[in-house]
Image (cartoon, rainbow, N blue to C red; front, side, top):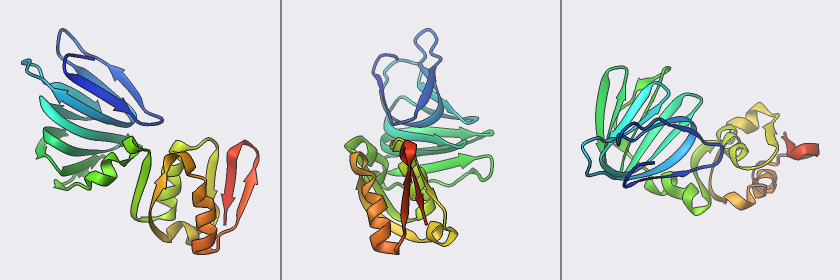
Length: 192
């Protein structure tokens, strides 16, 4: 990419490298990346995502772009997030989000354990509706889980899931919520 810049890509992540003459520039088209930058050069690292921009010289952070909603969690150092002419600087242990629907949010305390969990093979969930958890699980497993019951989709769940054992959630949904699962070819599971 560039001197002293590294990226670790999560599953189903798409990027485009647009660097020019020592100025590292990356577009996060979709997905999630863990970024480490230690730039002494005059040009900062620039990451474009969903119409916004993240810039830094020295930071460790995660940037996530799903359905054109972007969240940035700064683990160490400092980054600047720009969206529609507004700029907010965040530093270690802070996060911020932006999207067309909500604009640029306010900086808040980051859940570093949750933000970095995927790099350790984990999915940490704290008070998520089942629908949101299933969307996240579907990013990692072949096939698709489909929640057929609206009430089940709105039930709240917390827990730690291993990315290499995400089908355990199906049995847990039965134990926790009494959900039934119907498996179809191609890894499709209908939960009701």
